[in-house]
Image (cartoon, helix red, strand yellow):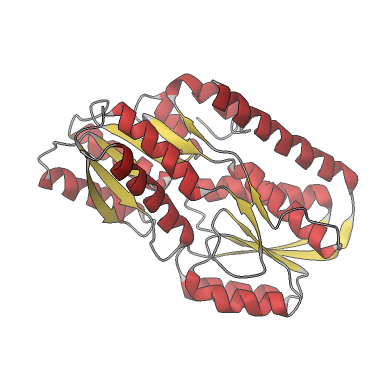
Amino acid sequence: MANEAKVQEEAEEVSDATEEKAEETADNSDVKIGYISGDLTNQGWLIINDGVQNAAKDLGVDFQLVTTTTGDVGSFLNAFEDLQNMGCDAIVFGGAQVEVIDAIEKAVAAGIPCVEIDTPSGAEGTYTIGISNYDAAVEGAKWMAEAIGNQGTVICLNGSQSMVSGQERRNGFVETMNEIAPDVEIFEADTEWNQENALNACEDALTSLNNEVAGVYCAWDGGTVAVVPVLEQRELTGKVKLLGFDGAADALGLMKEGKVDADVGQPLYKMGYEGVVTALKVVRGEEIDDAAIKLPTEVIVPERIDAYIEEAGLTDYVK
């Protein structure tokens, strides 16, 4: 309970700071901020996008939005170049892979501040707004180990291992499980953040293991949503513990239906909002206390679901 109180306190502090920042400025139309959105089929990104766009509106900046397909290096580079050509004073983005680090660092060197949200690329000189994916995955592993009694087999559906977030969400979970529950076997599959890949990988793993599985860990909630019908079809819902990651509205809705057992929640809306707030501060030459802002996370369980939805500002998203 102490940990939950701490999470709530930190979340309220972030929320208060966001509201104060919005009140401080009404017209910043002389500042052009560009934003590269992730995949619009991913509900987590849709919530982040709402935070970004609402912040741009509240702060009165000249806002330019371009969309890409998550994991598509070429489309990201094209979008990044387009925003530079538009004369953006700062660029906000997430989902950047290590292959684009050089382009990001060249923009920073050219005097264009870059703010990364959710998924850091590892580029030098950027500002980052997000969570500790590794630490959050550690907490997820602790929940899973307890939920399955430290025994059995867990299917681990990883995101892209070419992205820092994918690596950290995998490593935090697997390394912690190996440490605290060494008798648990981890059956890994890489999905590249693709829902169809997650569905197929889960099907293949369950078939290979004759359904003798204690839990499934999905490194992002697109995978979580894809796995739910797989478990339902095999009559494993409730028998196999399903742990997601993101706190996306569709996964939380499935938790309310009893089809998801836990989810590592991150403050998606606040992440997007704070990204634009930070970009404006940098352009205005205001002092930034820390180039890396870490927002709080928690493992959401059914007993906390309604309170979490309200605290995270997701009441309009969860059906």
